Length: 367
Image (cartoon, rainbow, N blue to C red):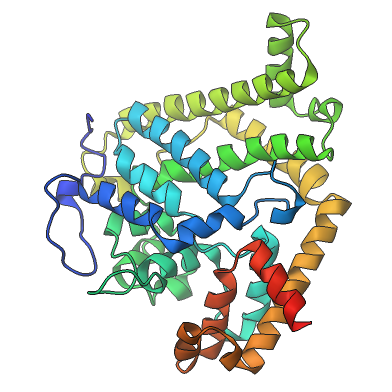
C-alpha cells in the first residue's frame, strides 16, 4: 500500500479511547474493520431495509449489502488516490450501524418520538453503537475504535451535539473536514444507494426503463450500451447502464479529487482537515448526480406504494416507543438497566437496534 503524506496513517493515529497494545500482524485500521464486521450491530444490518421493507422480498438491498457495496467503492477510490484503504473500508462498513429498522422512515419516526428527549440521528447512533452499545470486551464498552474511524462514521452533527462529544465533535465546531478517507466514503455512499435504488426500483416494477431514460446520465450511458450491443435485452441493458453510470461517477471523483489534491498540496492529514472538501465531483457530474437523486425521490421514494410502507413503518416505531417508554420493564434486562439513567434514550437504543422483521413481530405481539 503506497500512501501519500495526506493519507491517514495508522502509525500516527490519534489513538483509541482506551489504551491497547499494538498488534504485531494488523494495523490499527485493520483491527477496526475486523471489530466492526464481528459486531452484533453489523450482523443485524442483514435484516434492515434500504427502500423496501425487509419482508417485501429477498431481491432487494439491505443495509448489509449496501454497506458492502459502499466498502468496495471506497476501497477503489482510496487506492486510486493513495489514501488508506483499510480506514476507508472500516468507515464504510460502520457508517450505517446506527440505522433504525425501516430505513429513513424509521429514523424520522424515532426522531419525532425523541423530540423532547434530545432527538435521534442515525450518524450519532452509529457512533453510540461503536463507543458504547456493543458489549464484547472485558475492559471497555463499545469497540474502542481509533479516532480516525470514529471521525469518519460521524458524517453529520449539530453544533449542540458536537459540544457534548469532546475531541470527535471539534471539527463541526471549527467547521473543519474529516480525513480524505472519511470524505470519499460519503461519496461512495451516494454512488452506491443511487445506483442500487435504480436496480431495486426497476425490479419492484415501480420504475420503468422508459421513464429512467428521462435522466440525462442514465440516457447517455444506455445509448452507448445499445450502440455497442444493438440486440441486448432490457434487463442486461439496465445492468450495463448502471455499471457505466457507476464507472463514470467514480472516474469523475478520482479525476476531480486528484486535481484538487494537486492544487492544494496538503502535506498532512491535519492540513487536510483545515482545507475545503477535497474529494468532489466535477460541477457537471455533480449536477447529473443531483438530477438522478431528484428523479429517485419523485418516482421511487414518493411512490404511493413506498409511501404506504413508510407510513406503516412510522406507525410501528411510534407505537413501540410509546409502549416501552410507558413500561421500560418490558424491554430486555440490559435496556432496563440503562433506562434507570435515561429511559427515553434506552428505548431509542432498543428500537434502533431492531431489525425490520423483529420490529414487525414485536408490534404484532403488543397488539
